[in-house]
Image 1 (cartoon, rainbow, N blue to C red):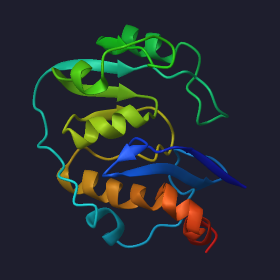
Image 2 (image 1 turned 180 degrees about the horizontal axis):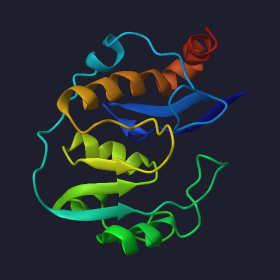
Image 3 (image 1 turned 135 degrees about the vertical axis):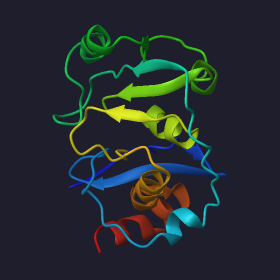
Image 4 (image 1 turned 60 degrees about the vertical axis):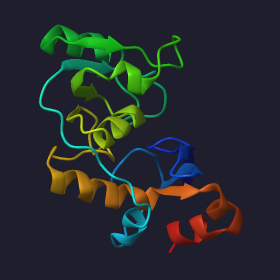
Length: 173
């Protein structure tokens, strides 16, 4: 079974239209074949320096999808009660300011496993994830973050790669 979903790093990324393609379920490590570093490196994306201070923001999920992809009920509220921080509601459930503006003073993001956290990692915001085998997991070091993006790139495909069949051929290789 192949699963497609919005791109983890956003559908409008690096001058293209992107979507995720994975085996069995999206947003999970090990659900796609990984190649060399060139796929990510060729995009020429500059990852920002790590932030060393700022507020903690918990990225609430909608709780949709199958287990273990979906966040547990009231996950964000339970995390907030444990570690503190501010909950950013999922933009699909409540209108919000842009993610970049909302995280402007953020020094730590907590997520179940969201695309917003992938963007936070690009912006140098350390991320803690609670989703088992989350595709964006890294150890919040330069090497760990780069390794994660180099792997993640193999599950993100341009619309043109779907249209040509290349995305499917690579996934089923």
